[in-house]
Picture 1 (cartoon, helix red, strand yellow):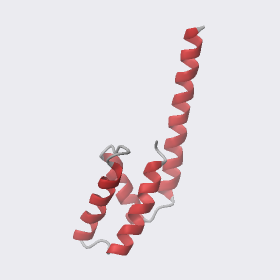
Picture 2 (cartoon, rainbow, N blue to C red):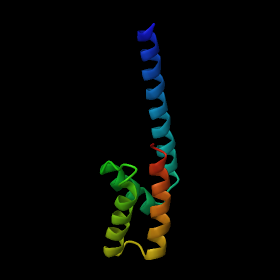
Picture 3 (cartoon, rainbow, N blue to C red):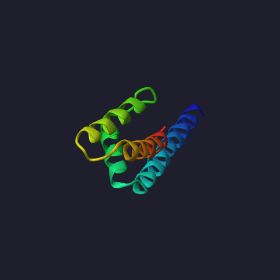
Picture 4 (cartoon, rainbow, N blue to C red):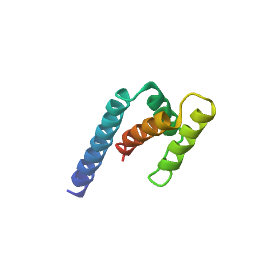
Length: 89
């Protein structure tokens, strides 16, 4: 009986993780090209709840220093990308 409960819990947690990934991927599709770039770069760094904000901030600052975005565009794209990353929790 415990075995069945354990299998059920593992199956449920796997489907929840897949749903979170699907929601985040759907969110990413709605981002601007700059937002998608920020999201992809941040995701590659495996952000946690504690590090996600700093990673997004760092990516936006990098794009600003390269002249790809200005402050207002970078902030807007960074906030949108951050929202998508939160969906992965």
